Length: 469
Image 1: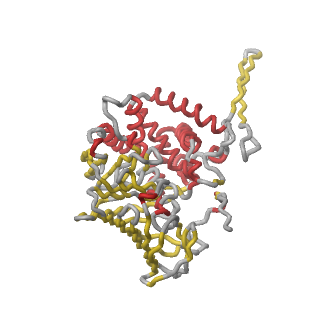
Image 2: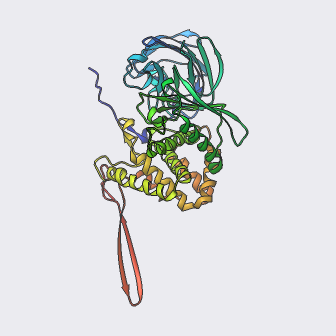
Image 3: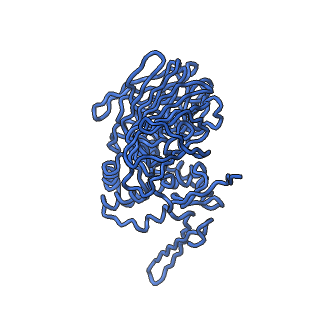
């Protein structure tokens, strides 16, 4: 009998994957219970890796065929994936699998929602689509062909070909598998054309079901304002010819920042004056901005492993808070953020589920999409900005984008750019990422001989796994 007890994953055990991926080509022949996925992947040995075992994640896949450089192979398959002998040189992996999107009720990987095909691959959903090194530090450009009689066929990147029953997409920017996306269905678009600060003409489309047409105007307006704000405040312009958002009724998360093809829960896209509240409009604006800002802080620069999750989420929450403050009221936004922090994150930090912004281990990564990683992580970004000042912050971010574009990074990489850009020593500040709990500040005062003295003492109570202050 196989022991199915989940095993913890430890930050200290990280090792790079044994191979780099130069190119991924995928072909989908969509069918509700018999979708075929063909993958052609160009691998080469990773000079930074010491472990060259070839293992590809894969779950709930029916393998049809596999080949290396055109020669059929018979890999060893387990419920977690497959392995086989490969050359110690560049090679091409060909594989065809069959999956059943209609039967995928976990809503991870490729699934169906009321007749529409859609995907959710963060954190580890791509392994339910095809065999692949499904980890965030493996980045590659993707080209995708979708074959179906449905009228709208979408994937990441730019459209490069379309004909009767097919569409092809090419994403030139390297990305990890968790950012892959595909949508196919009966959809209509609310569209606009946007010119970036660099002069690129971009087609903006928000895709909804025909019955929801006319409810995406505010979402589109929020997207345009987000794009303009990111150019003005962070110097970040959009980098593809098209940006698509799709509203999906059945979606596990609020929204997902897949490169060039954001997928949203419908409630965060659709609004009409007759039924939507002010809070609905505020949430649409904020979440549209958050997922768009991920284009640079999450997509172009991603996290090396899931322990670094706050590197993209904490930073992007801070950015969307800045945006909302500029669009509305900075004071009101700050009050709301603090109220949320006290109501959700303080409780988490003071309870049995307390954990650092960057945990040392996890058993199930989906359990770490928490207020600590998001909201407390965002507060750390705000603290850094106050430490170095707005000019130092902008200088550090410019260095971060130029130094790490196209890379999968760590918290250490992030803090190093601040030290290099501003000359600050952040050795002690780094503890904020590794220490759980909410610090307590004790204030005592004394007035003697005409001198007023204020004493401040700080301590952090023990938390699970961290028994000492």
